[in-house]
Length: 139
Image 1 (cartoon, one colour):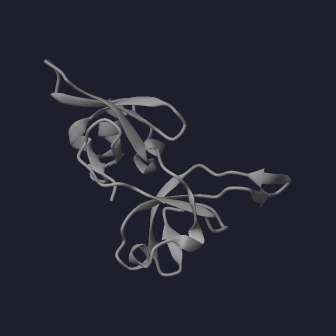
Image 2 (tube, one colour):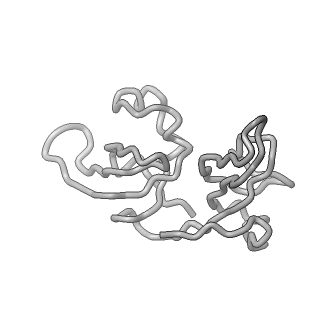
Image 3 (cartoon, one colour):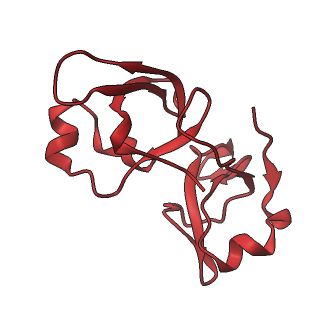
């Protein structure tokens, strides 16, 4: 699996080349909640911030996303050019677009519009059936 590292250890290469990585906030005080942990988000650096990080506070940890081909255990995301109507047609909620997904299975289909499918698990543990052509490796 992966190991969360303190955000202070983020390598310089991530700060300058828009390479994607995952971040999370662990043990943050939010309102009356003293030890809030955020969902993980896939981000890249821009200026002094993190693109796609939705919170007012900074993330506390990161992990590097390995590069590989789309196969079991690959970490992927849905390509940005996949439209909302296409996602609706496949019963995929819009929030899945910004999530890191782990490939559980790659399978072939004899029918339908998409001949190759994946079963991908999101960060909440929900499995989704997604056409392989819609996915890209997170780098």
